[in-house]
Length: 157
Image (tube, rainbow, N blue to C red; front, side):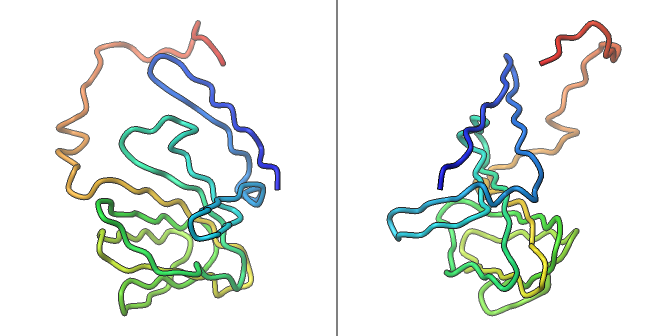
């Protein structure tokens, strides 16, 4: 399967890419050659956007499908944001429902797996970041810029 080449637009302090509709996620396939695994509907953003603090993936799981393996991480926790559809999520020996609006955080050592047990596609975003690395919050880290907001006379890309 030929995958589309995504060209980010970049500036001095940013990168932006248009992925298109979530409905078109089937055009992306994640391949893990070490275990001969291909997953349709999965796109990692780290390399595309040159991410330096997290891995983010955009995902689609078709009706009746399950992730075919359990996994955990050595260093990273994962946050799952369910956007559309219904399914079930399993961490260790606990199973719970997920649907639009469900957000799940899993520790490094949590053995996880999920499935789409509905008749519609399950869409979700996964954010993976180093466990214990977050220091402070927006109010401690954010710096206000004393500048009036203007949308006039700006470069458009």
